[in-house]
Length: 200
Image (spheres, rainbow, N blue to C red):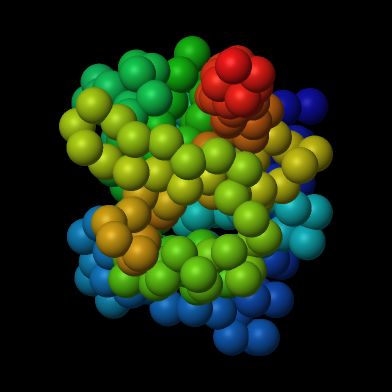
């Protein structure tokens, strides 16, 4: 059954790739990620169901399944701390970064979104494409991040690291609900502080 599901997932990815290629998809661009050689260009597409495939790999996919479907996916990764404080194992593969927790991909770093938002794009472009950000935050390393809805049903968020008004890095992360909770936690104390200040 697992092999059937893996084959079905791979077939969906191939069909989505063909559809995007026939329609014309954005090419890999400059950003926070190394540009792979032309023979291994990063392919970023949606499958029509809201999921995003990066080189045929999705957030939520088990690493064991990825290794069966993608010869050459690294056996060993690097332990990293995300800007959120979470720990992940990062695997670099075919020009993208795959962040794994408990054997499952939870975040993918890529050179561009399927819609073409990439390093160098303006945050205004991201807002025009994805709507208002649901959260914004800074990390202890000085990074600034804007979070947008990628897909509600799958709990996916676009996280754009930015400098000034330009995107530096692009991530797809399984954290939309958490980001909304974090945003609400920041707003509540600020609102409470304002109401206290206005009553005196």
